[in-house]
Amino acid sequence: MKFAYADPPYLGNGKRRYAPFHDNSEQYDTKDAHLLLVDRLVSEYPDGWALSCNPKDLAWLLPAMPEDVRVCAWTKTFHQIRVNVSVQYAWEPVILWHGRDVRHRRPMTRDWTSGCIAMRKGLPGAKPKYFFDWVIAMLGYEDGDVIDDIFPGTGGLSDALAVWRWDDGTEQEGLL
Image (cartoon, rainbow, N blue to C red; front, side, top):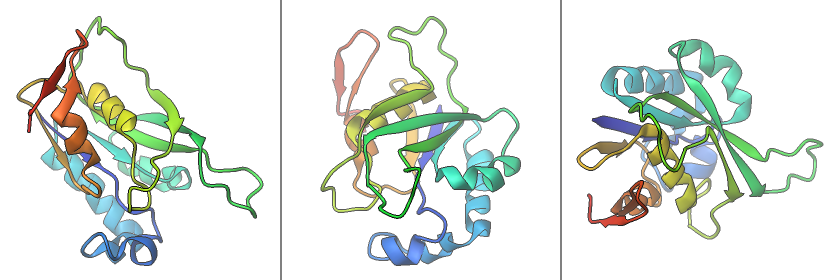
């Protein structure tokens, strides 16, 4: 199966925060670019995909998505504190579409995960390894599958896939 994971710059942050890291990051300062990304994910990855986004963008993103998407939650136990914000942003939606249906999965995979943010990765919004393990599990990744990382950033997804743990707890190295 062929899956994708996409973590585009939050709307309005492309040029300001990601220009040194992504070619054409400024295009993600428009809603149209994000909607085109959704169209791409749906058409190129019918087996399944996951998309990270800003909670405040759910209102306009979800109507453009297939009806059977699932909004999952990454809750951050340690996060950036914004002084002038009364209710802190301590979670990030991960929109999941399809993936392999794994019945009686052991251990089970929840539609949420919780933990600290990645620190000192050199890229704003970098994700920690446990986050990628969670996305890999939600997609139902198995040996021989492919997960395209649309915005590879720090390479965290490929690093996580290189030592993915199977259901029996053993690590499978060198899958890429």
